[in-house]
Image 1 (cartoon, helix red, strand yellow):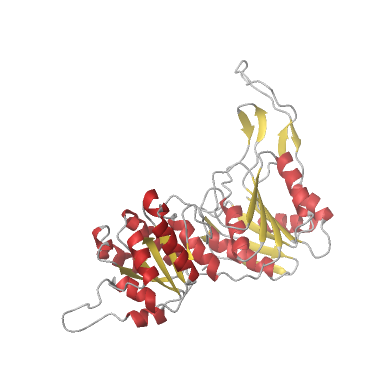
Image 2: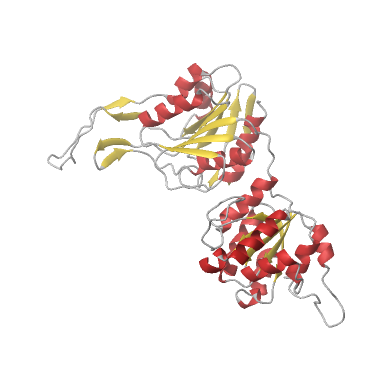
Length: 398
């Protein structure tokens, strides 16, 4: 579980076309281990049904002050004491105005006014409404009360007024809450991480590469950043993106480019995690034109690429931490132990292609962490959860 494990979140939903995205927010919060209670405005129910939301949260949706005609009522005060955080997403211009001025005419705003926990607000409206001075004034007023405004395209807590009005993406909203609740045990540390494959050109249109998606490396980078580290992420050619603050991304393609970027960044780092699937060989000669099919066979002569892990292991200074990865198909532990010693690693993360549904392009992984003090095996998990296990191990070495 991540930083939201066990956290109780009140999710407020208002009457916006973006209300359907609340389903994705709920899914992300619950996946991260949170308990979610939905409070929805009457207008919000015009866009998404309480039955859908209740099915996702396994809790009755709260909308009215009174749940029955016998006097049974929902206590906004109890909700304010129960929650670890309140998130209002989507939040319309109307609700922004009511919150900023204390107009408690529905259950959502009343709950907001009783909330003892931090409040996060994700505005959603058209551009003209968003840029109107009244809306901007209301947002500034809410900020002055200590609320956190999650503005579109910000990814995290924004302080400026720029934005396009649409609600920030659900994954980024969840990441915002995760960042708020994260343990900052890496604050002040500089961590370099390599991720993805490398492509070694054969000609202008062909290359030698592998199936690495970069998901594991990006999950590690995000985990480090959420825990307060300043992260340099050196990424091979991948489609994965991250909006987490604190990550400086350097895009490379070949092993040579990754080698140059890694050796330069490592000198100022406290730790490095070498998660990239770097090509071990590259063509001796690269054709400057597309190679035509003229014969029945084609021979490509290969030469070794730089061994980035070995080079960083040689240059590692006292106090620096170096973590490597070993993807094996046979003799897993023996090969990993040999790599651990030969490349001067503090520990090595071992995974195997024998574990179906893990490794390349998968959202899950199953690892063992091997060091000079022994071996620790882990269950198959989502790569974000695997990243937490790895960074926990690294953080203990500081």
